[in-house]
Amino acid sequence: MMRSILALCGVCVLSACSGGDSNGGTVTGPPVIPTLTVTLDKASQTQVASETNSRATFTFTASYSGSSAQQVLPKLNFDPAVLEQEGEIVQSGSSFSVKLRSLANLSAETRTGDVTFRLCRDTACGEVYPGSTQAFRYTLDVKLLDWETFQRTPAHTGYVHASFDAAKIVKAWDRTIAGIQTVHPVATKGNQLFVTGAGATGSGTSVFAMDSATGTQRWAYDIGPIHSASGPTVTGDQLQIVTMAMSSSNNRILTLNAGNGQFVRNMLFAAQWSNFAQPTAIGRELYLASGYTGNVVYGYDLDTGADRWQGSGGGGKVWDGATVAADSNYVYYYSGNLDVFRRSDGTRVKSIADPHWVWNGYSYAGGPILGSRGNAIAYSGSGMGTYAVAFPLVSYDIDGAKVAWRTTGTSKPSSTAT
Image 1 (cartoon, one colour):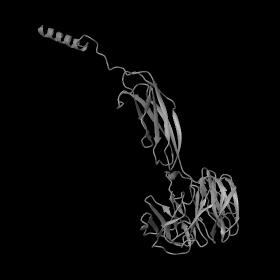
Image 2 (cartoon, rainbow, N blue to C red; image 1 turned 30 degrees about the vertical axis):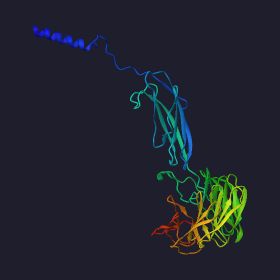
Image 3 (spheres, helix red, strand yellow; image 1 turned 90 degrees about the vertical axis):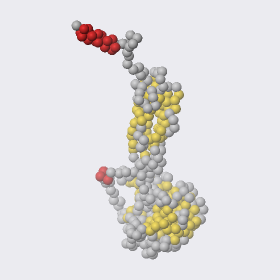
Image 4 (cartoon, rainbow, N blue to C red; image 1 turned 135 degrees about the horizontal axis):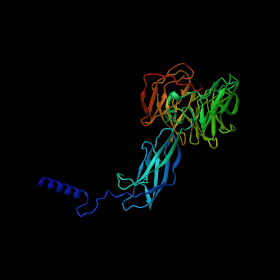
């Protein structure tokens, strides 16, 4: 009987302990987090950037309704491989201004993603206010630059900051132009492609503009029967094509309107029975390697067509087929030496000898490539584009005014008229 009474008392004690607190009150759960309803002033945004500067800014404002006795802290989530936060999130009352920007040096492609915004009660965002999570969608279109000249840019690197799936590359179109036997290296501007085409010896040469997506001809300019012409170089809304009718001091660099093919002006230079690479444009300046007996760099003002300066190379071993490279301060010419001219006035500030030079004629099918280490790289020797010969590459240390290295192997550069 005593054991039963104790058991009953034990049940009563346990029941009392689970039914309330020590003061007889009811035990409650954790406090309810209030709802803060967030709205965004814009749900999406598209920005366009370029291959050389992929920076673009995305902004939006997030506002909430409701209230909380606790702190209200904004939290962002986004892809750090594409975006970064620019500055702090700025709060004004119940609104938060957000500013993001894309990273520098992104490759050319279109990217789409979401930025998630939410409000939190703590810095770690362990507790999120209900109704506060919203998404902002961004589209970043990093576009390829045009192919403006020989090896694309004044540095002649041929570099394209993009990735392509080789398995998905297919021929979009091909086109045969009546009467044209030879085409020269092309240039592009937007959705237009420009090419110089020549017929048989003594027949006509023309410049053509085509739709790059379909190959449809947009316009043609008949240069006429001339000895030779270069491929075009694009400078803003104009094209420049180097031409030679005969040996003289009055050969023409022809300037055309890129949009409609209308004649703009001629700029004159000296040459004899030469073939030409595309001229090099940078800013509103154009540079050509030629000369009646070679070894001359010409500089022109593209706004007026006026001569800016002429400079002589230090090597004197190249007559035709060469192009120059250029950067913000200098023009670089391979004359058998690497010659460096100041852009502002044409002063030759350096001439670095090439001790590996081999002579195979006066033609040179190429130009210096400007490297990222204060260097310029060029084929060593001459005759390429004319003879089936191969050449080593030489890298020049510009600041040190010396040869940095030479390849042991050799290769054949492409002709300037392929």
